[in-house]
Image 1 (cartoon, helix red, strand yellow):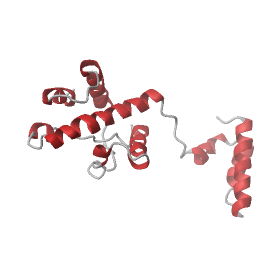
Image 2: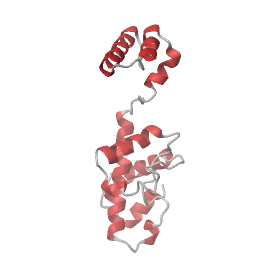
Image 3: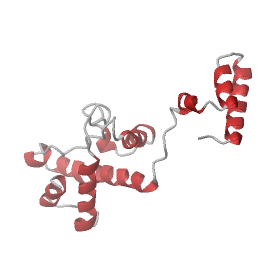
Image 4: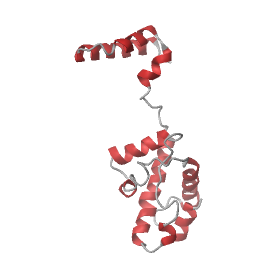
Length: 168
């Protein structure tokens, strides 16, 4: 999994931390890296996620944009449209924390760290910080595909068009 050079660089980084912090807590990690005990690499690197490909990042931006720029403004302008307001997909529910973790983490980064998608951000508490607790990827893909193919990602959609996408 790690080349000798990568192991050497990481081991040296931990040696520097050991000196700076004047602690022996890094000795085990240094030994794991120097000796090449691959079985324990996940303990060292477990908090480092796999990359999110650009296309997947764009997909997340698209679904958040749909809610932030299309659905939420419509709901604000039409507070008596109960069919849309009460629609099960009238707000962004997030992604499943177990099977769609990288998507959920990216949403949190966009909203919490980059302060984007302000209309969607207000649903953090309602959605357990955008953890839907059930798979949403397929549903969102259908919605984005329909928004792109049939409506050219227009932002000024009519009521029926919004419902069409929500029902995708």
